Each structure stands twice: as C-alpha cells, then as structure tokens.
Image 1 (tube, rainbow, N blue to C red):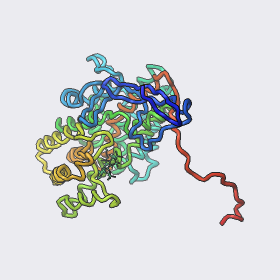
Image 2 (image 1 turned 180 degrees about the vertical axis):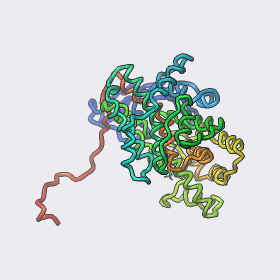
Image 3 (image 1 turned 90 degrees about the vertical axis):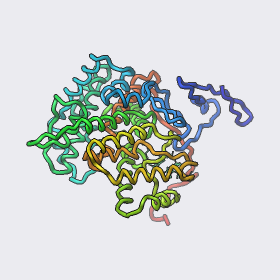
Length: 425
Ligand code: CMC
C-alpha cells in the first residue's frame, strides 16, 4: 500500500507489482475517494494498462517479446514467427506456423475494387496517408470478418498482416506511375513485399537472401514496443469497440509523426542535409543542442530507453553486414557513425541519456535495399502491425471492457457569456 495525505486525510492506494518487478501505484479509486485526479501530461509516469506482451527495461536497455530477449529472436526467428508469438502469446509449433503462413498467403490479394481507391490519390500523396486510408477501407470490403469471436479475429489478423504489405507495395507503384505487381503465393512474407515493390511485369526482382533477411529483421525488430504513441492510440480506439482495421488505421496516423515512426525518414533527410552541406556533423550537433533551433539529432533519444536501444545495436551490425555483402559504401553511414561518436562523447547527450534509437541506422539499410525515403515509415508500420494486433486482442479479451477516457484540469475562462455578434469587439 502507498499512503497519500491530502487535506488532512490519509488515503491508502494499492501497489501493483509486475512479473519483472515493475511497481505502480493504483490510483483508480482516487477520484471517487478524494475528489482529486492525477496530472501527467505526456504520460511519462502513467501506466495505462497491465499487459502480457512486451517488456522493456529502459535503464538497462532490455527488450523482450513475451519474455524472449530481442537479441535471441533477431538471431533465430523470423518476422512471421515473431508475429505469431506476439499475437498468440507463445512460439508456434511447426504445424501452427505453417497454418498461419498459409493464411497469410491466402489473404495476400486485395479486393480488386480497391484498385480504384488508389487511383483517387494524387501522385505525390504520402504513402502513410494512403496506408491509413486503405487499411480502413479494407474493413469495408470484408464486413463478414468484423464480428467478434476467435475465428473472425484470426481472419482479421491474417488479412491485415498480409494485406498491409500489398497496400504498401501498390502505393509505392502508384507514386511512380508503374503497374501493380500481384503477390506470388510461392514467396515468403518479406520476399513477396520486395517482389511486389520492385519486380516488373517483364522481369522479376532478384531476391538476394541478404536483402530479404535484412528487411525481415527490420520488421521483426519493429514488431512491438509496449505502450508507445501508436500502440496506445490503437488501444484507445479499440476500447471504444471500433474494429481492428479502424484501430490499426489510427495507429498508422499516430506512427507517421517525426517524433515517432516518422523519425526514420527524418534521420535520412538529416544525414543527406549534412552530407550536402559539407559539414562533418559537428555544426549540426551544435544546432541540435540549442533548445529553440528547431533541430534535434533525429534517431537519438527515447522516452523509455535511457541506455543504448538494443534494436539500434542489432540494426547497426546488420547495416555493416549488408553493405559489405552488397559491396556498397554509403557516405551517410560514415556520417551517422561520426554523429554517434560525437554525441556519445558530448555531455549534452550523455547527461540527458540520449542514445541512438531504432531509427538511427534502419534508414541506411532501407536505402541500400532501394526503398525510397518516403516509404521508410510505411516499413515501420508493416513491422508494427503484429504489436498493434496483439494489443487490440488484449483489449478485446479484457474483462474490464471500459472505454479509455482520460480526464483533464480545465484552465479556461470562467463565467463567460454569449455576446451577440454586433456587440463583439
Ligand atoms: N536531440 C537533441 N536534444 C534532444 C533530443 C534529440 N534527439 N531528444 C531529446 N532531447 C533533449 C530535449 O530537448 C530535452 O532537453 P531539456 O532537458 O534541456 O529540456 C531532453 O533531451 C528530454 O527530451 P524530451 O523531449 O523531454 O524527451 P521525451 O521523452 O519527451 O522525447 C523523443 C523522446 C524520442 C520524442 C525525443 O528524444 C526526440 O525527439 N528524439 C528525436 C526523434 C526520434 O528519434 N524519435 C524516434 C523515437 S524511437 C522510435 C519510436 O519508438 O517511435
């Protein structure tokens, strides 16, 4: 129990302890008992749920999906297997994995009428706008799967994970004015995405295993990250009993911003800008340290990690391996490494515990694969889909069933009155 003294009264508040020893004070009866609410504007100290999916220890730089360290999954698993683990809470047997893979293949085609929706977007529309609109539209094409129940949920989850990839590829092709390439059922998940993006009707894209593995790893590393901005959004939308497609579409919108998933695009833009200006990075670092300069070292810092993001370490290694395998040299990788080195020996960054996050090196891998910058955040969204679905499922199955609805402290005018328009100053 925690004890809180307010206005001469003592309130006892239960302490909740998670399976990894994380502690929270349960204030759910505080307002009823005392009339007070708590205030925590950007939720830095607020636990919004008890979840069994993903554990992060930001101080120690630990990330685990369903208890399994991200390093183990990165080395031994695949994106589709990790998706199963996140959504169903356990590693699949051989049979379960092949059934799940078969379902993904079965649902990879979009409803043919969805083609016309793509035609309605202007050629320069951002693919994240197309992605969120088309995910929501998908729900309209399959109303039969929108009901409750295990079977329906399975169909929705498989359709969403599978089709988000087809939508992404079609929006990329649309932005270049190229004909759509339909999925090939013989290809595995990530290979199929690359095929739909980069093959031509007259020539298949060469699926180098190093490229397929690197992109699959990026998806796996992005697959869940507990209560970040987009996942919290998905949970809030789901709590109103909106369907999975609507909830995931909202997640895409939340992910888009440069402080969240949009950071991978912003990192590459920053590195290109530094490269073109001839700066070795030191000028940019100085600007990023000035509070109102409008600049931040993108790909650095994290609300939860106050240590090196474990995903960044894995991605950095993969980045070196991929460029070596493709015999490519990328000046932006050199700039990124110089920036990292400079920031990690600068007291501004060390005192604030700002380290590279998942987005710092992922863009260099995607650039080496040939994915254009404006598709980077779409790749993040494809990867995050299983996490959103797993969190949606937790809400669906929660016994509580309450709608998420924060309170506020009102600080606006009091005793204001309506003034007829002619008498207003
Ligand atoms: N460059 C320079 N200064 C920074 C940076 C940065 N990247 N990040 C934080 N700071 C400073 C910030 O100005 C503040 O300084 P002060 O204490 O003097 O006011 C202090 O560090 C704390 O920052 P904050 O904005 O209060 O921290 P936050 O937890 O609200 O924000 C963050 C976390 C990720 C939004 C922020 O670090 C940031 O904007 N980073 C750059 C964008 C980025 O890479 N985002 C991707 C996050 S990882 C992918 C994902 O999960 O979305």
